[in-house]
Image (cartoon, rainbow, N blue to C red; front, side, top):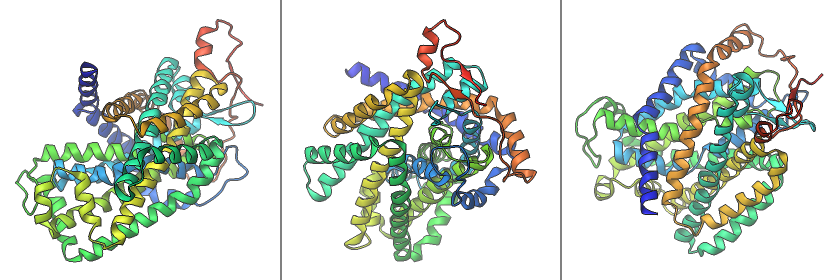
Length: 482
């Protein structure tokens, strides 16, 4: 087991090392160029997210799709993870994190666009999509599609269920002395009530709850900034200066080089918004939308909210709090969790409650979002008959995740997330010409309200593995719907 753990640590550090960061950031920059800086249309995407296209084919509203994507993306990493980036990379890491969010909008846009473009539907009319269908239908790379689905399904049990349930139980135990086993039972029951209800139940819950939890957290952050008002401008100055200066920082900060600040900032930014991983494109495919560009604009706002807004405001809160209380931080400067607790502790009585509520709800909604991602990956591999068994296994891993050691689970989850990103980025880059063409026609040629009249194919067998095993050409064929 020790050798296995050591191997996982090595593989994880390699996969999320400089090559992956360069691959991801390079893709972000390239797609920003190909889409003619699609980031400038972010407020159009926010406006579109509030509209409904009821007459369009799809399973849920555009906002419902965005809410589930936000639920899966906005997690404990947006709170504790930002503190860890600052602790290891200094205040300059916040600016690098923000950069990855800004440029990551282009990748989230592109992967969502091609997912909608190549989505299919079942005989009952339910939508199926994501990188696996893009690789199979758009590039004839079915083997890579199977790998993406395999990595995604395994990752969902780690980062989606066991890790998140353990985070919730740990916070409840530390804050309210609730026994871990009691939390395990409660979490499993609540997940069962929502996850077993399928996409509609998950969507209904996320639409109502995700905006509320994000709003409450942001209000808490703004309250801290008001308390630290005399330190906000110095904090912003320190963030910008430290991002491009190798000087040693003072006032409770660690000294970090430009490369260290950039590495930890970009890594945390890439983790927080999942741009390039291909996960959010799965739910984008289920949305009711007139054309691929319209939904892609809406999906791209998820990166804007999760990193450009939530991670950035968290970073400013933490840096200003460190400057306001340098003596309280110096001895604990390598612990992101402690930095976060110190910051929210400034709001007497209410601050710790807001932080606890944020950690619990962010973790729980992440589990909900990833349950859908994992289910669609498993359905691609084994067909619709696997949905109910997957949901049961997913809920059971959430239960056992509370009591199992999570060091290896965290590393395995990060490893499979990286393995998901590789085939997804290949698809996005190879289809970047299509992304540019669709963007030019629908967006820049002012055709955003037009309907894409291309029929959505009907998939008569949704099991990719069965298709490979069966030599009968008629079985598993995708037949264009009339």
